[in-house]
Image (cartoon, rainbow, N blue to C red; front, side):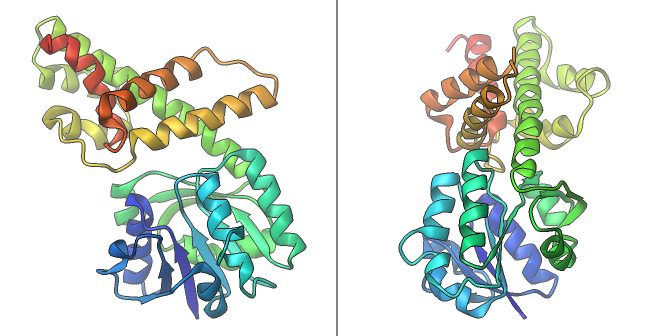
Length: 288
């Protein structure tokens, strides 16, 4: 049975490659065909064409606007035979859009799973991502064997929208912790300590974390090849702002952390890995 996959960004392509390596018969579509050329699978001409050949399709695109376009737009999935089929949306979405997408797909006889992932390129390559899944539990159970091919932890969290909300909560910690590490390392350098010493100290002290383990070499070498971009974390924090407002909560962190990534974007770092936020502090260390 063929499985569909839409969205071959940095993480999407790693997941698609992992599925192929695990023996999944994949058919893919991406807006830029350039990103499909080294995948050993069938390339569809459009989402509407793709849905004709599969019972379920993964979607992993930049934001809710892009998700809406590939699902409901011209030549989107919903323009094909969607009845009885499952859309697994791994995009980090706006929670309001997820509620809309779930009901709209349901009204057309299909199924929509809200299914963002935690983790980036390295765990994807190893099959060690975490996935949060919300929506129809029966369709979750049907798709679980696929999730197991690229995830080490799988959480079913109830109604559609819950997975997206939990992902945004996770990304508050992710963005904040990365910012704290970047600031602390730059502060240590400003005080005259070697960067490696500061990183080693943090890794054995309060900074000990999976984030620092993964980002250690990026921070030491300042090689910010994209695993998860500044643009993406900034977008997610915007969505988080709306979520916080919607549940009548407050946050000391969100606005400040979001603004730091906005500064990184304005410095032209938007396409780089989000650990490149270090460079906004590095400028003050080097005096540039």
